Structures are given as structure tokens and as C-alpha cells.
Length: 362
Image 1 (cartoon, helix red, strand yellow):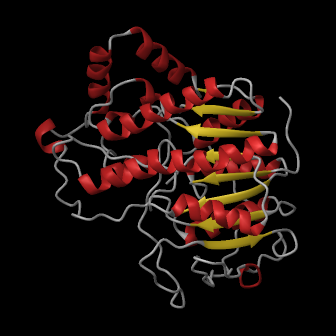
Image 2 (tube, one colour; image 1 turned 135 degrees about the vertical axis):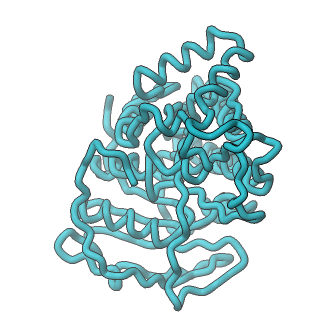
């Protein structure tokens, strides 16, 4: 595997989970990393973590809600306006929903389809011709082991991941003689906040043997740079994929249903979500097993807007280092046509070098 030096990668859902660990690997190898996620506070904090660990690396953040219709176009235009050359696109943003389809939240599922499918297709449509015209490039599409089998209790989520697999494999055939490669990442259940946002924290899947974001990212990174067509982390995940190709879909669906059931509640009561609001706040920032959380309180001087906005932050060795991490110096607002520029106040919390741990993320 040959590491590409001094090139740029754009990663969606980069503020946590698999996306953040991928950003760390690219930063380690001196790529210019463009981190994209929904919420500016969480994104900026993730960027400062990486900058403290890799003070020499150039980092940029773009906070934008990719579930909005015009967001991919606005993101692409913004990257071009900044003059950033992108060599690798990582379509990692996504989230899920858990429960019986008759009882799950429609608005959340429609937003999921928009982010997991429409945004991914839109970004691929914009960046693929750009990479081909550039003469080289790589794309990582984040699917799931759920791409290969029906997924009762996660019916819409599994269907979005099946779409990603089919779409990406078709592109691989179309691009077989082209200088741009497409790699599909199909991770198993991973230790992120996916189960919390999906309402599946009591499921057998969530209570089972989860992969870590670090090991998933390492497998994806190696496969992507090698130009492999598919990356399936962990031996258990490989067995799941093999099983899905051997057994009939009906049997696969039955087995997946049993694995997805809740561990302590009855089936009738397990999927009642009386606490789910009619119009939930969707936080789409992570990968195949996505992350959600209560949005952090915005600073008082941040301009409110009902439209999709972009907040862009430039971080590099000249404005931030391990010794002098002063957010007030590094965070600047950008002004561009059709963009809402904001100045972000980031509390000067010292960020120590992240400690690698095998414990589950909280």
C-alpha cells in the first residue's frame, strides 16, 4: 500500500465515531483534512483534538446540514471558492432509526433517506467528474453489513445501506478503466452512539460484541488507499456477509430480526417510543453506525437562520499548535455568496492529546 502524501481528503460526518478516526489516520499521514459535520461546536472540538495531536497538519472544518436539498451543492461550491484541491472523498455521514415500521417516526426516516442516499449520490455526482478531470482520486462510500440482508426493526436504515452497496458496485464497473477508484466500507455493529439515536440501546445488537471505530477506520483506510473494492472489518463481519450470500433472504431476515430484538422488554412494548417527539431534532454526523446527541448550546452571538448554513474554520500549524491552542485566534468567519458566515466563540478548553483506549466510547 502506497501512502499519498500532501494531498487533501474531505470527510463527511467527521466529528466523531468512524469519521473522526478516519480523519485521525489521514492527519497522521500529513493529508490536508477537510472535516464536515452538522454541528459547529462538536466539529470544532474534534478539529482541535486532531490539531493538538498533529500540530503540523492543515485542517479545515465546514459545518453544514447535509440533509438539506441544496447542501451538497453549497459544500462543493464552497470548497471550490476556497481553492482546496480534493483528492479523496469520504461519504461517511448517516444515521439510523429502530423499531417496527408501523410505529417508527416518518419524518426521521425521510431525513435518513435524504442524508444516507440523496446526499451521498449528490456529493458523488459533484466530486466524481471533478476527480476524473483531475486525473486521479478515490471515493469511500460507507455502507454496512446491513447492506447485504433485510433488516427488520431497522427496515429503512438497512434499505439505505443496500442502496449504497448497489450504487457503488455499479460505479466500480463503470470506472474499472478509470483513474478513480470507489471503495465500499461495510462495517458491523460498531461502538458509537448510533444505538442511542436510533432508540436501539436495549437491543441484542447493542449489547453484543461491538467493533471499535478505530479498527473499522484502520481497515477502511488501508482498503481505500490500496484501491480495493470492498472493506469488511472484523472476522465476525466477514462471516455475516458470507452468511447473507448463502442463506435465503427470508431466513436472513428472520435471523436479523432475532438479533435486533430488545433484550428485556416484550415485543409489544419494546418498540413503543412515547418519548419520541413528533418532529425530532436529527443530528447526522457519523458513519454506518451514526452518532447523535443533544445539540450543544450555540454562542449568543451566532446568527440564527432558517436556511442551511455553512460555517468554515481554518486550522493549521500557524494558528494552532500543541503549545498554543487559542481558539479566539484561529476561528474566523468567511464571507461568500449564498453562505451565512458566522464568528464562532469556542471556549478555551485545553485539549490534551487523546488517549487511545479499548474501552467503549460514552
